[in-house]
Amino acid sequence: MLSRDLIDSLFPPDLPEPEHWEQRYPPRDLPGDAKVTRFAPSPTGFLTIGGVFTATIDADVARQSDGVYLVRLEDTDQARVTEGAEAQFAEAFSYFSIDPDEDDRAGRYGPYSQSARSQTYLTYVRELLRQGRAYPCFATKQDLEEITADDNRNDMVILKSSDQELPLPTYHFAHAVDDHLMRVTLVIRSDEWLSSVPLHHQLFDALGFPRVRYAHLAPLMSSSLAMSTSGPAVPHSASRIGAASARSSGISASRPLARPRR
Image (cartoon, rainbow, N blue to C red; front, side, top):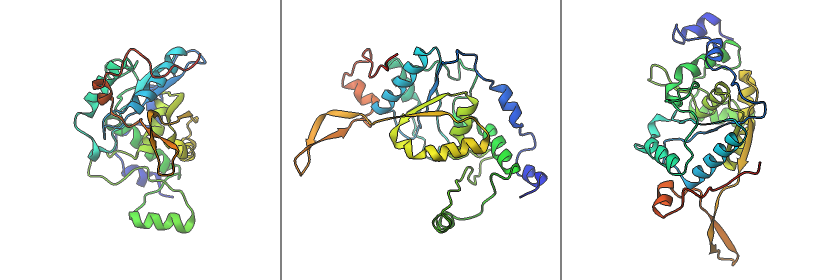
């Protein structure tokens, strides 16, 4: 285990301690059964109908429980950011009446873009190193694959080398820190993330955070059916249809896509 002085020398000298962020983002003053939900799109592409469906449920669950629905832009992968995606998100939120209760203009738990929260993440990377729960790694991608295969280990990368002054962490690490500090209580997402639950629980436990609850949604299916070569009808996934395409096709914004029961 590295000495604390050596670990601290790897980070900016004015980096706050975890207590600073806990005080800046205190527990929310909400009713006991209120839900704090978040929709967290990545600007590596445009918003889909599947995303609109998820965000609608996020908004309804939060508002029906007197909670809070927020949108957080998950843009840690800066190399893949699509120009115009963020503006398209905002347009779709407005059209489908799923504007967030909190954003950078009206919210005390921001910034609401991960690229603006790098200092926060570095605090918790440093803390894991201090506790011996993380370690510097100089292995190549191939080395890591071999280590995983040979030792049956599941060590995850939480921060990659970068030329940035304040590098951004991997998505998995960033989402755990953000959900905790934004005091999210329920994460509603597509069932493609179901296999990531053990990994995310591992991160929450290592960071000493209470685990957030997860709810996973089945993919949307289109009403049109295609015949497979063997005969039975096979539904096509409709979740990746763009929200802009849906709007141009006349999908009504006044008719909700889903309403959870009270």
